Amino acid sequence: MIAVHTVEEIRAAEKALMAQLPAGALMQRAVAGLVTVCARLLDGVYGARVVVLAGAGSNGGDALWAAARLARRGAHAQAFLLAPEKAHAEGLAAFRAAGGRLVEPAGAADALAEADLVLDGILGIGGRGGLRGDAALLAGLLRAGRTAGAVVAVDLPSGVDPDTGETPGAHVIADHTVTFGTGKAALVVDPAAAAAGVLHPVDIGLEPYLPEPRLTVLDDADVAVLLPDPGRESDKYSRGVVGVLAGSGQFPGAAVLAVGGALHGGAGMVRYAGPESVATEVRARWPEAIAGLSPDAVGRVQAWTVGSGLGDGRGDDVHAALGAGLPVLVDADGLRWLPERFTGPAVLTPHAGELARLLGVERAEVEARRLHHARQAAQRWNAVVLLKGSTTVVAAPDGRVRVNPTGTSALASAGTGDVLAGLAGSLLAGGLSPFDAGSVGAYLHGLAGRRAAASSGYPSAGDALAELPGVVRSLRGVVGGG
Image 1 (tube, rainbow, N blue to C red):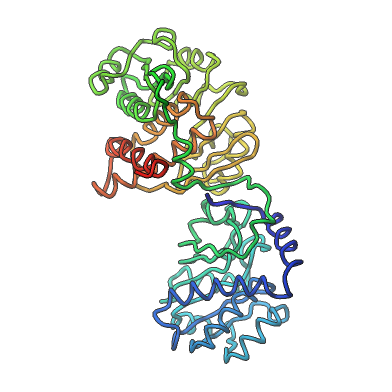
Image 2 (spheres, rainbow, N blue to C red):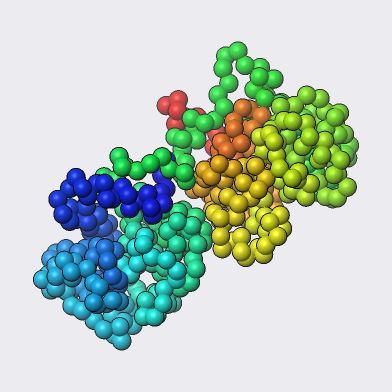
């Protein structure tokens, strides 16, 4: 699991740790990790051309110290000081002592064009707002591909907001980010995460001083532990019965895909509610599913998945499912019939456009502030909100958030959301909390999309669905050792 902390929490932890260490020791831990990554990225340090973009304070100091160490190993180091009067004194002295050369911003284009590696040390976690002045011009050169070498951000790309993942203005786009101590929201939440490139965490000893994180990123082991695990005495009812209210004459495939996702989510039985013409298609593809015309007709269920491909005119059925007092997942067309607030367990699975409509804002606003709007909606409806997109954000009403790391553009295909709705709804029926069901569903869905892309190139929703059993089997092996 990757823990993500706020700037305030990180600052407090750094202060507590520095009180136990000699002066400057914490910075040198960070610098050692940064140099290790840089040396690995360079095709030999000796003779390499390293360019530092150094702002004021510790972030610029980390970059200058790292360049000094690389220079002592034979690199040719140059530095642009964005605020010369506020440059980190010790780092600058070490840089100069190692033979590093200062360059005026007017020479930036030529130096960057020849660089084998660029160190972005303009702003650290204390920075707010986009880059301005010379810093913005330098970031623009990097964005325009005016350097042949790798761009390595120190702790996070300069100009992004560390706590929100927002990009309020000009910012650096890095190929790699070497981050210290703990995760930052900007490194896992888009749009800022798209600017971070490959992440390289460096442990500097902060963990004992950090609080329990409110934002996390799960890994295989975490998800394997959360997967429902039927016991020897389990039967189809104790494993959970999920009802699927989906599909219509216009969108029958949505029902087929949602039921398929539900069948692979661990529940012991899937009951489908919908028009007979659609039910016929569901039974033809999934004979193990039980079908009825309405929520009242399908029999007892323990959770509902509602909304995929419903179209118009199904409001009464949606209200019946939402009013049953059971855990519920609401997707797509079902989002049009939300109650004022949920009083029981609920998961909402909008994409950015749907969430924008629910909140009365523009889609671009949701895309720019994904973490903010997911949390806002979770509190507004007292439900877990799974905001689908380039980085899926799963937000709980109490402020906890999980960011899914398995997302892939392979899932940018019609019907994949229907598969996710059925899958996560089945996990809900299987006993997972809404927060866990949404998180685990998104994780499995992403892995299935990646596997489908590996085998078919441009996978369909059906291709991703077909990969789900193998994904679950492999994750079970993480816990079982098989």
